[in-house]
Image (cartoon, rainbow, N blue to C red):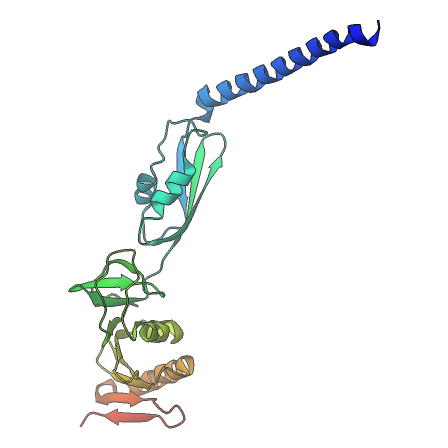
Length: 246
């Protein structure tokens, strides 16, 4: 057989090979999209503590008994990101029938009055949700005029960044016993404990050290006579002052 006569045979073989390949691909796609084995049976939510798994799964739009390959994960990610308490989210398929939603939540660190309501803020000043004064570990920031804001948005106001820095920098043990973080017009910081002790920090410098010293002083003084303390002043860290009630 010469070269000219072999060409049609080769072309025919290539055609059938291509046809068979396309057929196999289409058959596999049909099986994957129609097989009950690949129906979504479980939606797992990981990384949540403030939001319930049901809340996150519902807002994602991902539902069970739908083919796992048809689930629009990007749309689900976009939907979950609309939740103010969600900082980041990722979704993955776990074959044959599980969708895993991994969330990173924004953690509330303080409260503030915005539009006449107490709201929770994260360390960057995002409006997370309405809160309640007196919540342990969430002191109320005062002395800072802020603009109107809605959930999920950054709350803006002169001095707010200073107050949030204070909350993040002082020891957690001290933050847990605070009722208020006040920012004065000159930028000086005053803390108020849940039992009414005034703690003057002065300018927002050496916050970790000042906070640790204040915590030690409060613990020592309260072990002796808690009712006599009016304020502690660590404006000058090397010269602390303790003022007692008369």
